[in-house]
Length: 379
Image (cartoon, rainbow, N blue to C red; front, top):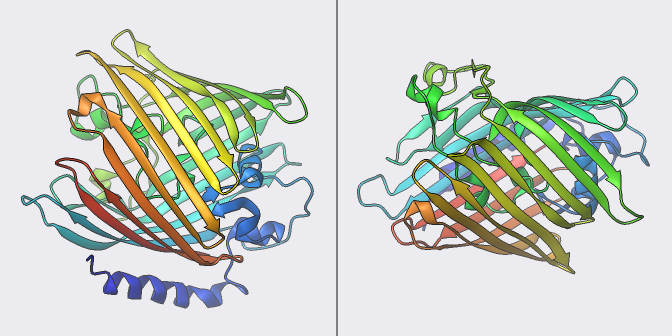
């Protein structure tokens, strides 16, 4: 069993300390439009059809009037991890996130912004130590509505059909998170920022066109150019090395995405190309049947060594508002590992205009077994 008494106490204490800051202790978007968590979420952070519309419409609800509120939310979480590796510290408990989130529109809704700043950020490395990246931006971007085209500039994930930020489990599907290798010379930090993965964030510029096909379906197409780098305001001494502010003008390559969508059902894919030795392509299908939600991803990536396959199939069952159960099967052939099975449980309460969330996940895979638990509050 993972011993998380300290983490639970600290997270709940921080939640309690923060309560007086806001009259009702509720997240920013829920306060702004006077809705509850269930308006946009199947189970936080998994979005329902209304939530997907809200996200893709860059945080606008045309049928609701905005309320004056504090334009930010706070997300705090603690992790417990048990790794089946005799060469590293098997059990690690730590506070991994204190995050400030803000977003919205201005100038008659012609412009929108989104900021996700991790003032406190720790993650476990392969050798079991903690990597301090406090002060990095998860997202920081501006979107300009130019009529038929949206222009996005800043730091963000390169694909929109599946947003892994809203995953109900703790880990990202390997089909989206596995990166193409680094290239060129420079420090280890700079070289690592030249890697590309569909779910990874990069400084970038993107052009997006969305148009209706009929009353139910919309078609979205985009072209983006990601650059090596990371936007950050390092908070600690170690973060000045691990999360230094970096930017290279030479782009990583180009990303093209196209998909059709109706509610939570979508069909599409994306393609990244740098040169004949570095490219990636994935086909993506999402859907739902009553209380079951699923995503299937399959593709190929090319490195200077050879061509690799990658795939991921995930299903989520949400029988009640407060609980959901899911599992994912996945593999990337270049890892040299057997396929992985990743079941998880997501429980939250009260789900009104703020929530406490507990997520438990286990990874079944030869040489990579692990159990992960996260307790979080967002308000």
